[in-house]
Length: 390
Image (cartoon, rainbow, N blue to C red; front, side, top):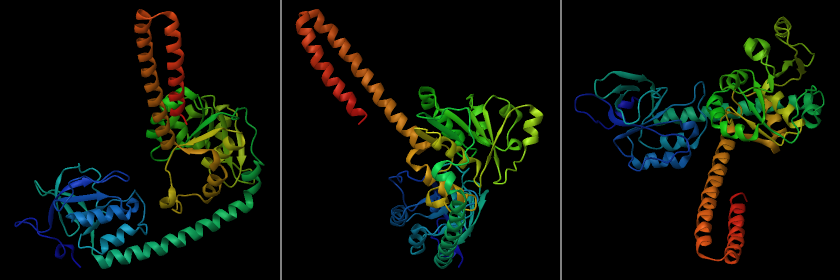
């Protein structure tokens, strides 16, 4: 079915619908005034049913589904909610570079600028029947991928359970992890921004910094000195390899490691880590079995959306479970640290105010009265500050 047959005509001159682009970010509230003159651009793979129902209630002109790069459709209820409505859904039309508030015209899956009719993106229309068929297929693919992933993860567990449970086979490093915070920086998308957000946390706590493959480059670019680098030597620059960090080279279970000749040429020392795991997972295990108090990890928070994607290593499923008691995602750590910092700042403001009041009291009252007042006020203040962190 052609989408043009489903759409309300918004222009007497050109076919299709005309609307204002509204980028809807995952987790963000919907705009208050969302209606028939708006085109909702969002990732339906991360859209809850309530948001989809709100879009249907608002009778938006169209919905443009923009998934993460390389990600297939997930069997989310939001697709079924929209399939049961008359709202057209456009797929594979990348409007990431089209500014919020831009006026566009959509016809037969193609998005044009309303002002000059320039083509902005080309996608495909999905009528209700097509959308339902696609989400049914996505459901089947998702379950099949989960079964395959878990089978591979179980095989990894059967091979590496001594490593996971007891740290058997871990290389001995001249690095003290015990009772310290550790930040593991991967080369995943989002790590650079997350590392920037962690800067105040790193400055205060001086955690052990572990760079994993491209994450070691990110640490260096951000002017941080990595304590440990877990990487294939051919995957990082000479500067990273010679910066003085303890270098751990991932190896197969039989001990073969790629790129050791490069380490030899540079004249630096390295320790191999034989395991059927990724460099990321090796870094987490080194920190966990080394006694780290908390492990902060950058990169994608896979969740169920990306847990069974081809890029998700089965070893990661088991390793994440093994270290889960001390694992914190970088976004959560940065958020908690900001909240804590705000509480401390407020406490300091109140303390400054108390000092000012004390000065006034000292000018008017006797020293004994001031002492009684100061003790009572300080006790109240101390209990209030304590409440900020409980």
